[in-house]
Length: 210
Image 1 (cartoon, rainbow, N blue to C red):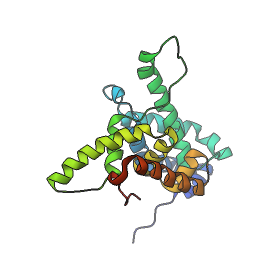
Image 2 (tube, rainbow, N blue to C red):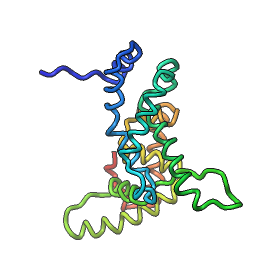
Image 3 (cartoon, helix red, strand yellow):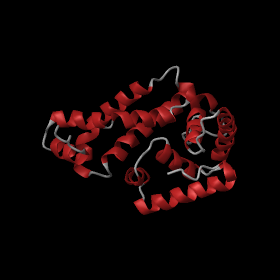
Image 4 (spheres, rainbow, N blue to C red):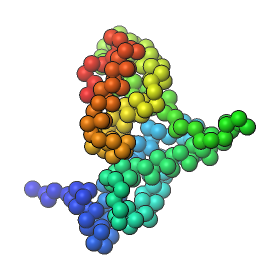
């Protein structure tokens, strides 16, 4: 039976002891989930110029540079810390490539990072009944558009939590780390976000949503 690979806490301990191999393993361990986060939040106007894989590499390089400071303070769990670096990088890309084109005299402050339409559609698909026959697929497309509009009506806080849970597929523990709240608060807010969405959609809502 192959040995169980070390978990994140074990790798952090090894890195703090000067193990460069553990540092590389630590960063690569979270590469796939980091890419998923970046891909689902990258603005479509950036797609022709920005490859999610390149952003991942930039984030990992920045994380490697800042890792010694992280190890001294451990301000949060490792993945939420890594994800925050990615979030900051996406905000910077959005500001430079998208928001700059929309800048006006009236509003110069940074805009919230929007959820791309493609990701909203994907999230819609994960929150709807799943059917395989042609009629079900037709209704699914119609419902998907309804849900996309309903998501736009939700508050940013509710929408972001649903993205964290159902698109990025983060655990309750990691969501708590990302948002800086308790796991219990995450569960309560998740239930309330789904309730608000259910009120907007009625029977189109997927009651089996985890």
